[in-house]
Length: 167
Image 1 (cartoon, helix red, strand yellow):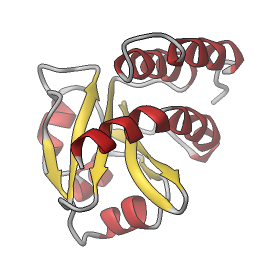
Image 2: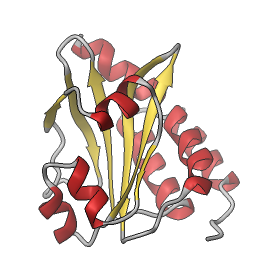
Image 3: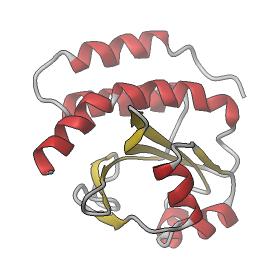
Image 4: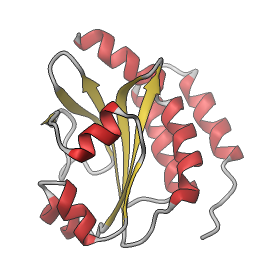
């Protein structure tokens, strides 16, 4: 699938990152950019608290269904190892993939989401958070990884600010 040019959206995000109200202003701009360039129904940003062995939701485009502040334990699952520790993006293409990885799969399905792209936000060999995009079945593929990775790295300053305040 051909996706729109990300260049104007990169410019919008970088401009937003220079404004007051961080990290929320930057996260909203990243949400809008990814909606326009890659697409999503549900979009969240999780911050990884290594010492607490938890991930915490700091941004959600659906706060009623996925409120900010929700926490998930960091487990030893294969998904957690791959995404959080090895820093590899994860693409789930269908309902079975969603069910295999996420305990809240029924809520995800109820939103019309049957595919996912989880992108680690990394710096210096460590994962500090994830950008999580969910959409209808078979929406994401490997061609989306570079674009989402770029926006994930633009989220890094905000995630580091949150982490520094929480640790």
